Length: 178
Figure 1 (cartoon, rainbow, N blue to C red):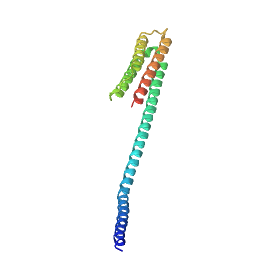
Figure 2 (figure 1 turned 120 degrees about the vertical axis):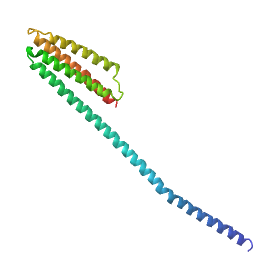
Figure 3 (figure 1 turned 180 degrees about the vertical axis):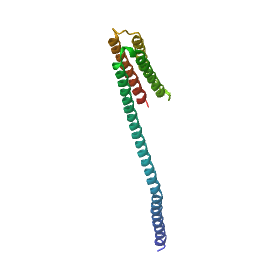
Figure 4 (figure 1 turned 90 degrees about the horizontal axis):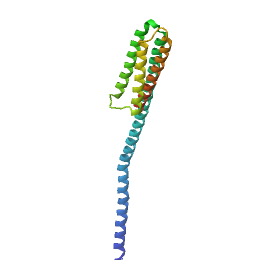
């Protein structure tokens, strides 16, 4: 009997420790589970916010590109309509208006570069070449005669279209880099 009491005491203590250990583990789970679910919820919320921000940025970029293209088409058509309808006597006015519109293109590009974005060397070269060709055609327009007026208008029209395309492609390149 002397051996049974110490053995029962040891078993009781072991059982008590085991039960307390399980309870302590259960308490740990109970106190950490809400924290873990809170972290999971916050992580999920952050992922949803990031996805929404990405979708918003993509939508804004698409809208900006669409607006730029609509503006470009409108400006292109406006310049071409004015040129096509112009009479020989209106050549100085048409030249001045087209020159102003080309300056507007320069301003559009300058606005896009404000954030420190730069055009690729290829884009810069395309614009420079197109601008030089357009300026030459404007000079020819100013010096046109009644005999070559239609031919010069067509050349100016082609040069204007080339310049608009070069600028629009460059704008899209800058917007895509955003």
